[in-house]
Length: 187
Image (cartoon, rainbow, N blue to C red; front, side):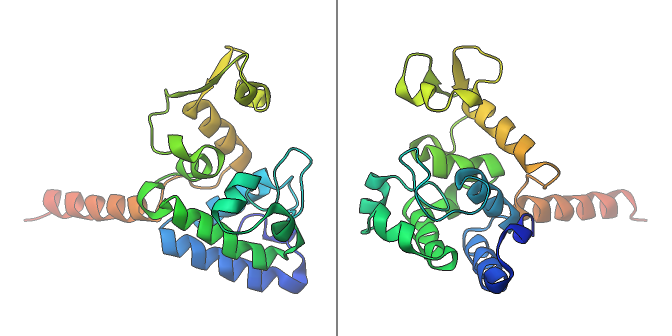
């Protein structure tokens, strides 16, 4: 699994097993969750405060922690494996199983869940807003705004060569290819 070497060997199996279980529960690739958590947790899967108002593996905000019936302080004190339970609760709250079909979708559930599933052309923030100034790096073209597509492009660049289609989409594609093959090769 991508980035598993960034997890201490003493907890690596427990952590990656839980990542796989969470990903299977919602129907997306475990690598996607690792990418999102690494991106959001200051590269090292830090469960503590990040100095930007966010805490933990997916950058929990105080209002998000309260929604999950906890606090940022409690989350920050958890181990990586323990905090994955709250990642799971968060994904359940935002109905990730219904909304996540790509790496971009998963990241949007974490970054701005109300916008998850909208078209890539959807403008998220414009210059002058606090959302823009806090996330200006997504505006790589200096347009003065950034879209879901811009966010997705950055996450995909960050991911490198990790496949970005869901397992369900991959299985469907294989099924269609098999049908096409038999259709054209029947006697």
